[in-house]
Length: 76
Image (cartoon, rainbow, N blue to C red; front, side, top):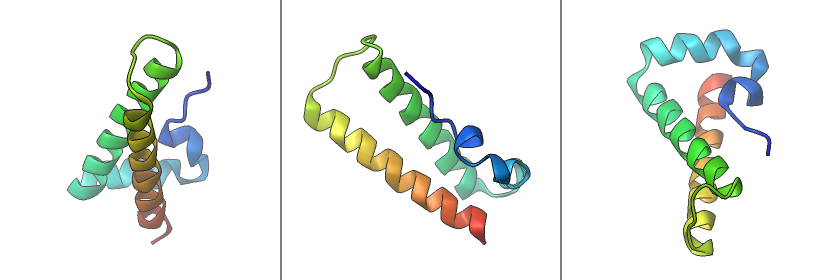
């Protein structure tokens, strides 16, 4: 199963991601939460963890929300 870390999702923003991680606490918080959720979803998809469908749906929805927020921050 393919991973979806932010540096692969937004390769054209590599430098800006690094800059915001070090200078913007809110961005860093979103970045860290995104990667934590992405890692957990990957583990579930690989069968390493088990959750109910509703919980998986909520995690994926939160992941997309964070990704959209991060993308908005990268565009500005």
